[in-house]
Length: 224
Image (tube, rainbow, N blue to C red; front, side, top):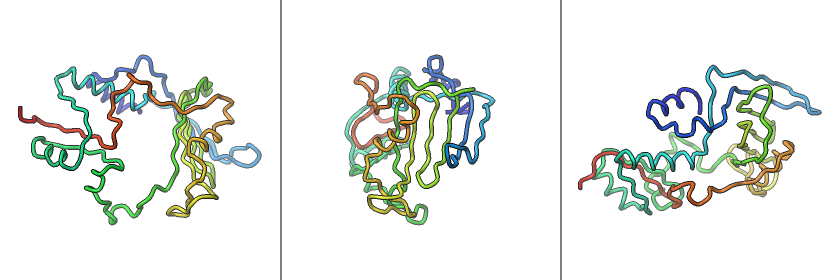
């Protein structure tokens, strides 16, 4: 997240990790060329640094803060009947349906989105003992023709969006669904960093996020 969003958190007093989270000082963009050359490269420092906190940690902390400030927090499995009931008792109901039964309540609008399947394979990898980027830390964008995009926060996390050129079933737009697990593919891509990479699940106690397929956020004053 960058300055404007971070300032919103400061204004609300929910910037709980600002002192311990490493800073992202800039941005960088690379298109690799042949023989380990760069066909295109630029980098620049930001006017204000950004920070990246694992969303699972952040949302869990915010839910605790919400309860401390007098909010009513309930965690349970939710179905269509629950959404109908909440819509009668709350001013606003926000639904993150995932692949649950609730998802069938919200059909895709083909006029607004022609895609009915993911176009990319996305993987997030946490890298241990990753050396900080020099001469300053940055979110690095790497566009690899025929393969996909590789993003690195420069400290702890790497995001890989793969566009496979062979194997698996064809996806919309000429992409192919990889027959290799996304995490394995991502690990192979970042192997050149000479750092040990591994996927990591939050330890028990770090997060209180609902592990079920549906999340609900209800705003307003429900009847007592």
